[in-house]
Image (spheres, rainbow, N blue to C red):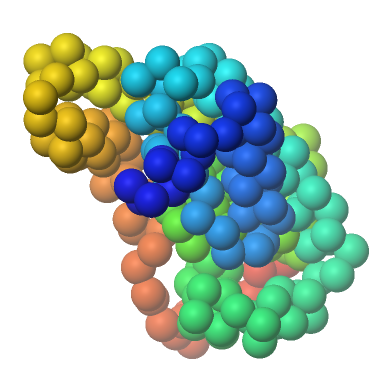
Length: 218
């Protein structure tokens, strides 16, 4: 992450915002990219004055919401075969086990899987395409998607920005300690959401009592 932050610091602010929106947007479409690392790195840059936190958060939220919506449209058109092709292309991130786990989350939690999925690496990638493939009503999907994207983007950015500024003030001569403190604060910022979202990640082998997911159930 330090390398990413160093690389971003050499770019003009406008380019940084575009990279934040682009990486998070592509990740949200269903392509595994380090969206959260880019957001955290950019938020830490904002704490040093290189970029503005409001634009980092806005770019991240826009990328998340638009990317998920595009992923939804692609998933609705391509259906499960598309997800299976993605799984063959990215077996480590989107293989059969990961897909089954994400489907289980949607079956149990509905659109809440979209909201809390923004805080979980697996569902952050699969939420849009999977919701489309399962024919979740778009209005319900959009509300959960927008809420999750805004809370994740602005919450992460501003907490890291605030703590980073404090760390920079009190730890001017120990920059590495300030960075570690800021990262730890970023983890703590989403702790309560991740604690609940972790249940969506758990591998639960389908049993005979589980019923298949139908579009009409959404």
